[in-house]
Image 1 (tube, rainbow, N blue to C red):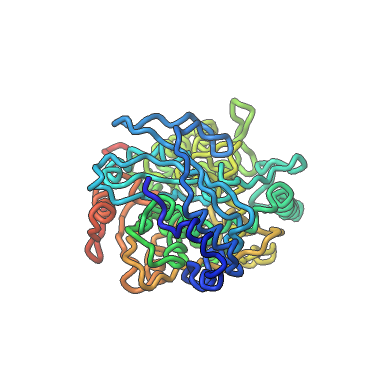
Image 2: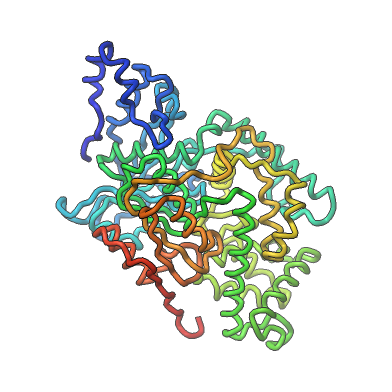
Length: 551
């Protein structure tokens, strides 16, 4: 691995006395004018920063992902024999105090298949969440990125607070299981009080088990970690592919370090103009739109969600029938063979998870038809398989594990970023708007905004700062049918990044994100930019490739 581009520690030590004041003045700064990791410009801070930049991670064969990362098997070699390598990167716990306590970040990489002359550098991935383990995720998706490996080392990581990077832990023996709490308290004050109590007790458990880390797991600190990775990996520029929450992380990085941005692609773009409540309301509309698209497809396939096909002859009928089915299951759940049950929350969880990828639609159709016929097994299994626990759980790729810390990290990072702290009164005042946006998804998303109630650390801001004047072009891929990051977010991110920075590519398709959908047009456009630096023409639209008849 090429050496990090940093001032030699030996030189620093030999001139520390003479240059202490000038080191203070010259410490690297981010876009907001903060010295990166420098609280007072002391010699020890400067020395610590240079030590961090000069480190050489010890790359080794990857073990199986730890339970906290989601578990699974150790990644096998790629088809050409290239092994997956893992390492740790030492970074400050608090970037404002680099000479203080440190933490280790877990990294994974596969070296390029190209020649040294072809190699551009490292391509860093973040797959979203927040809370998903990049170390566990990247090897499983490697086939999608094999063309990109012809010019890049593929690299991902567990962001701070996630998985093996000082993973936040919130469990407490005294807490009820989250599945025992009604996330949509529509049956009296007792349910509302129980939800409020659960959120506050969860916050207290997080503080008890991970209190030292909670102030330092926000997106801004993670972006600074990425710039350290860039330097340690030997890259002049950060080349990046961020998906979902990864687009927010990429936008924050561009704001802090516009001069270090390389070829960057943001796919499934988070709207940086919205606070938590606004984002949840937009998601309600996004999931409703995606479900209506599913319903139209289902009607064309001849879905039967009632006693006969005529009960669901068009998309509107199917939507209404599923809303009615959810209400009926809320009153009388269906039992399943493993002593479980399919209630209304589980139905919404299954539908939510299936809308992340169009590939899941046929299974959702079968499950809904079975549930309408009093058989809840398929939908119950679908919710379990897709890892959806309510309307906000699970990862962007649908994987989860009951021992992973993904849910805890999601809460910790979200609450570190967002300064919004909503009350029951806030939710009740906006609940009609959510129900209007989506009677099926709106209530759960409205009540989810209480998740930071009682959080022991104040959040950073109402929404992220992503303005990046002077940065090179950043390619933004927006999907018109995206349920989790509605299409409008791409245009708003483009405007916030700044003139000539955000470049939009539209995908008229379904599911969350676009590149991993396999759409040839999207793939070709993204690959052309990352591999050759060629941007799509303004206004480029990629149309979805229709599934085979009957699929």
